[in-house]
Image 1: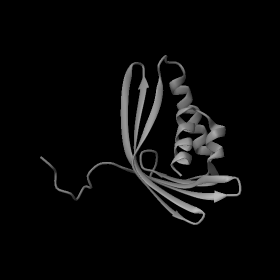
Image 2: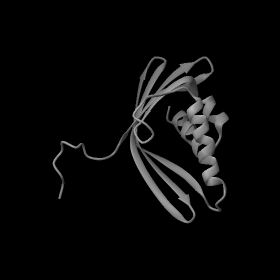
Image 3: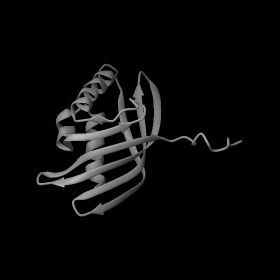
Image 4: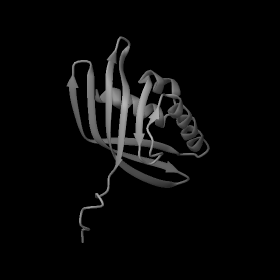
Length: 135
């Protein structure tokens, strides 16, 4: 399952919409806290995002994005797999490194043509507002 997850993520960084399409169900759904407060349905939104990402990286020499999956957990229930982890992303653009991280849950289903992403939920990696501040 982790190999499928890495193929799915790498398709984004590579700007490869066909590889991304091959690892996602057409009716995939997303909750992405940094994009919108609404659920995002279907593959089209992310295929457009992949094109934008590829264009953003396209002009600069040495520009790239890579990821690390921290503390992965795979729960397998027949033809459904739930993968939870913290995603660390590093992007290099114009000689600057930008790092982000978020917690993710990705749900995959085994179709006749292989495992595909059917749902993804992302949440930020910061303390909950009701937690006391740390010093």
